[in-house]
Length: 245
Image 1 (cartoon, rainbow, N blue to C red):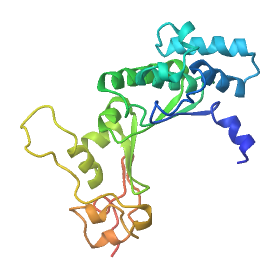
Image 2 (image 1 turned 90 degrees about the vertical axis):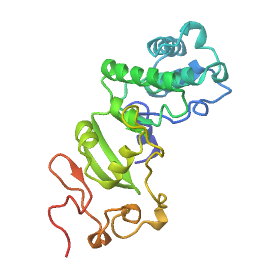
Image 3 (image 1 turned 90 degrees about the horizontal axis):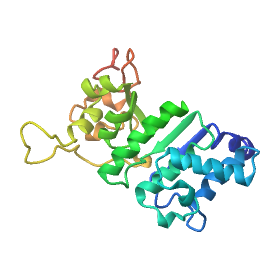
Image 4 (image 1 turned 180 degrees about the vertical axis):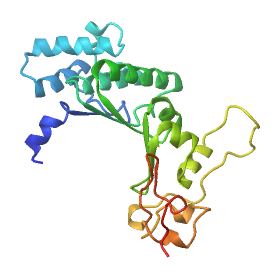
């Protein structure tokens, strides 16, 4: 699409929360300017109206004393407060889709939980759908309705959270879940890991991309398995109905 058409979608229909709140805001502009600029780019409103809306959004995401904080600069906010400001900016035009790229990675555990609770609450009030991109399986179990597992740029498993977490079908998904530290049961001397290293896009094999690291690989894995299944999809010859000769 031409840039002019893309601009009508970015921010208004699709918005994004980036991974690192420390670098997501321009340091020479106030937090309120960031939010108001987003609003004025898509709506015909005055500076005063955009600023008032920015104060409302900061209130909604839980920033204390928003009427004063709207004129603060990013370095005057903590990491958690910056991420709340980024969320306010993303929600400024009530987008239909919110893409969150590792939005809690740079935050401590307590702040992480607060941000996830905030996103779930705002999803209900704004009616936005959320696509969460993350390596943290704990975050996935907390927030996701449906899960898509990817490896080497390809989808390897897809299904509801319950099916993917309780009955994982792809070896990579099982490896991810087994690598999560357990809080109960027998204490392990060593945390299970997936052997080998992730592949670069230039090194992607012709068959299953996970085959070089998979303990269950066999001859059929030299061909690319399709993503198939009834509601719970998997790209693995071990779960396929037809295996190449």
